[in-house]
Length: 164
Image 1 (tube, rainbow, N blue to C red):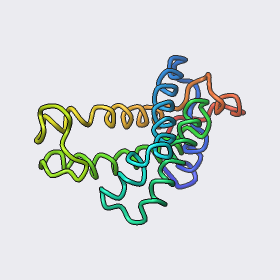
Image 2 (image 1 turned 90 degrees about the vertical axis):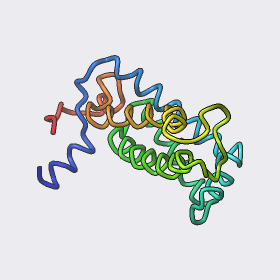
Image 3 (image 1 turned 180 degrees about the vertical axis):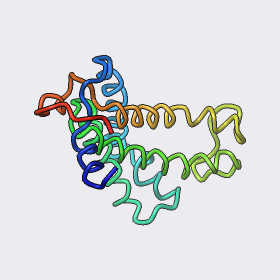
Image 4 (image 1 turned 120 degrees about the vertical axis):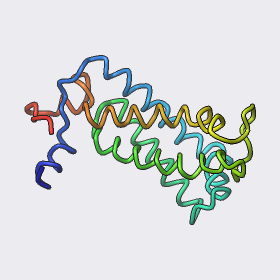
């Protein structure tokens, strides 16, 4: 695939997928939207969390991530710019999982231990990663399948491009 084909595939996703794709978009988009909003409303979920995790410039980083989640969540929900939003969310979820779950596995998370058993190790990670896993898998699905026919991307599409 050439760079031109890749660029076209990102900005012109297939829109001929199942109509039920709207439910994946609404679920994942809704979760990203409200998680972004909560980063502003509850400092312990935004700047406080980013400080504990050791992110540089935590106020700016948390604000940036919150806006990506809010805008990207809205994009998912209406099915507009679905692939760019999915790429951003896949990167975000990889960073989130690496920055939070390794400490849980080792039992030394700067965010503290999980509220219920198991407190550390693989079992704790598997329990605590469930939402992250659902969000990254939903984003991967939307990246590969596109937003479906009931989307703004479909309405704005002049033709159905080839699948990459």
